[in-house]
Image (cartoon, rainbow, N blue to C red):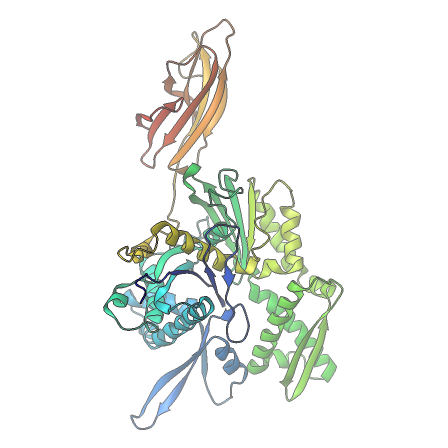
Length: 543
């Protein structure tokens, strides 16, 4: 009997606003992309939905909620009966509701949160089962990196992903996973969630931005923009690399909720409904107002848009086909790509304006989300960021699956770092910080030179700006410059260039001629340290 410890498998879990995706990864390098797992229906995504209805318990004279989730929830909603009241929730909404209900006074929230815990845990158990079956390992050997929504910091929003919400995400995944594992003492102590990543950060990991062994690593790409255009809207997140550490800092983020994926789907659904009504002489607006028909329309239009996104033939129309859409009448409406471009032209124009207003100047532009997979939406992004100088990411990463793949790759890197030693409790990493608010530099620092007669507070020649005002802290900059002998002795130093110019520190014991390497580090507390020619960092003082 072998005494070897079973190998753990890294799993990336992308719980989107409406769709969940699962990816597994055994190779943390970018040479082999993580594998996205298909569900029992053969789809590489699972609806992150729960449908509930109240069931009468005549024996106890009470009602209990009955839940179905995933594809089953969609089928129940499509076949709903008029005499039954169904409630539809997204998994993301329910998990956040559980966190809010702990300290809130809203009794209705508490009732919904408490009654939905079993359904949410069962949903996560299904996702874990998919990962376990696809990788042929026992559920107790899964280790999950979970994606969480990107934190928004702009003038209109100031979202925080607080500890209560993080704990709610981890707890529900943990509960679903434990329901699959043998009830042993060792499994009771294990934690399945080994890391958390925001959606935008996961996209960077998927494309190898944080992989220092990859030729497209973050040392080449210091400023990265992630365009995440999916169910929650058009989210633009900017990152800045942290030197050679392989880490990223979130500089800014903004979201346009008027460009959500559901708005594109509803646009197509309303058009199909109007064509169906005209063809079959139904009153205008009657079909889309019918809840059962509307669910069927939206589901069929989502499928049609996915087909359009994956089609290589721009001239071939897609067909929206629904059996018994309304009053037993079948629907079969063709949609050409030019017609679709015309239907969503207003939305695309709005998106182009949002992208152009960012005025991004950087090194890499990465895309993710279901909407950006559509040809017309992709053309808008390419039009704004079509410069060949931008790194556009790995071609093996589909935009709609980038988050799940990035989480899986991060999990594989964690497992590679820690190894398979049973004494290491990798569950402790589940409390990792999620893109906290950044400390920004209040001043600009530059390298300058002056002659002997010059004022200490004024540089005759400003050679380079090393740290811009607003740079995320801590900042570590390395810069080289040449000293040329021209008959006059030059003195070099670090100068504050904004909000006003003054000398911060003189650089002493420099050669008369040659190349000089200077390293500057500014901490979050404002401590400035300097190193010359690769020597140790010497603290100058708090700024």
